[in-house]
Length: 105
Image (cartoon, rainbow, N blue to C red; front, side, top):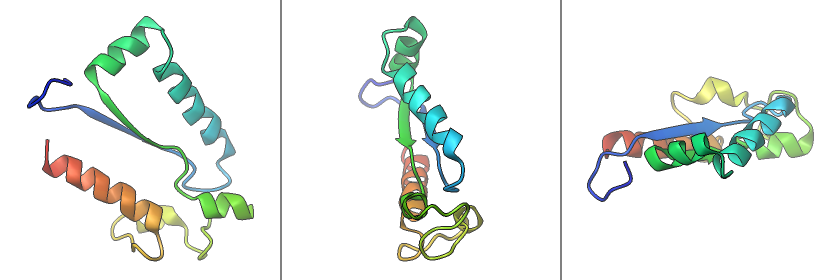
């Protein structure tokens, strides 16, 4: 999978799109801890897959203590179709990454 010129298989993990989803931070940290561990299954996963992890998609909302909204008052889950680089920069960046990877295997 990680040979030059080979098509790569990618796993994308995101968390905390809603600031109130506190457990997702622990789940995401657990995934990261496992993937970097010496566990044999983790090694197989690292050898065959590329992991892209965005552990917090709504950092401003988390910082402010919001439950669902970003600093601008948006529920980011409702803006995946057409995220604005100005109003939803984290979604815009992650979606651009996904689209670029999809279009360039």
